Image (cartoon, rainbow, N blue to C red; front, side, top):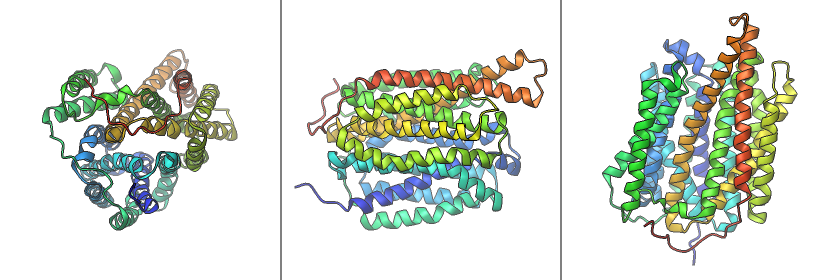
Length: 478
């Protein structure tokens, strides 16, 4: 008989901690200008608070499959929470950039341990017919926390100081830890796999190099032509090729790539990566357009993006229940069509566009994303046998971080080249109205490219089939 778990308490403890991690990520983004003034640092230096966070996740995620097999659920949960709590406390007390940077790395380690643990635990404690609803609540947190971050962060900065972003988070982390200590059980089997140091080194250099290279390219100035950027990406890609060759030749690989033998997992993964690319590019471009192109304040721009992101989160549990009942096809295809249409309208935005029009477009975009993300992801993971759950979640989370870095860098590059092209033909390129028009031209190009990515997603979506969870053992990768 299958073991009974207190699923609500376990899910609650994991979601509270997940919320804080995602919240502090975007809440700090809104504080960047403030931090540049306080610490007397450049935008490129301040960017490291986000890049460093992404880089740590990119290095940790591939190892997460191994960690899930080597340590118990409670051991990983407590380690994750201690890292998050210590990191958040140091950030709240930080009096210089270096101290805050160190705190961000500790927070990223906490999140890097927590995210795979969250997905893996849901796959173990929920039967397949109830996973959609549970994943829906994860969607609520993953979307709602980043949505509230800029708004709450903006208010805290306006009335207190940026330190309060972390003081706000700290008690929630402690509550999550206490609930977890009381209710969280060890749900996975500890198999104590052999640690292959060469695999860890190749994965760290590979994923770390790619994420670092793309993040650095997105910082501007030299961009893609920078020696550091080119070297990082090339070294990263070579290490990744060696990493894949190493995994396919091992009896017990660190990251079992036989997950790619399951077609619905592959389609689900591709659709999640497409969503990630669209979200990351629109999340960085839209606020820039709203502030520089349309002339709104940071707080107003944050408020304009709140309804869409909040609705995306609120809809996630409902979409999860619809997935459990009807499967992915009738959710994913309409979602992608809606996203493509919204992006086409976004490509027509100008400084004269009304607030209501922009807010409605953003709501449409985020509703479309909520119809795609969780159904595609859950359907894909459902096809894997239980032995591959840790590897399936590790691959998914790792590639999401990589795609986040790529999406951001590509969006910034398209925006920059569009702006330069417009200003090159302008009679007065220093005039504020001309700069606003240049940002608009660049933003329109980004949204057009994102629309083509969404159209590609529609092609993939026609191959999606509802999967019944597999209970077979994993196939050999050889």
